[in-house]
Image (cartoon, rainbow, N blue to C red; front, side, top):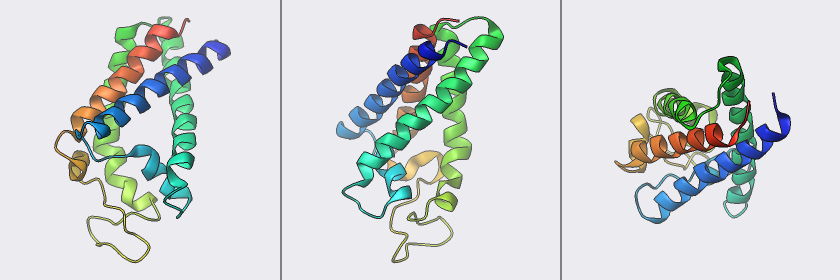
Amino acid sequence: MNLQGALVSGFGATVILTSVGAAAQGLGLTRMDLPFILGTMVTADRDRAPLYGTAVHFVNGWIFAFLYIALFDQLHAAQWWIGGAFGLVHALFVLLLGLPVLPDLHPRMASERHGPTPTRLLQPPGFLGLHYGVRTPLVIVVAHVSYGIVLGALYRV
């Protein structure tokens, strides 16, 4: 594994993923603010949550970059289209498994089964993240496929 390449390409891919999400939110395509959601997992301070969440998001981006790169190394190939395919699988995992369990892991998020409480005020994502808007699943797929494409294009085996 090329450690320097993994760190640089992982950072670049995470910048793209984060930018796609931020742009989609700014354009009104989704209400999902992943840095805010991640930040409120570690602090109740809603002003500091985006900063902490962005840091957590970049660490997660590097962790997933190492997983993608381990797969690239097993295939002895890192191509943009292979990364895009990995990103699609990753997006489907997020939509079908990650978002449904988020309310169970998040200390400040309401759940589908139990409504809001004084400490659990964040809206749960719902099936495929649809509580954050009908275009949210598309945004998640585009962001993760973009992440994989950038990672596959930048990393050299």
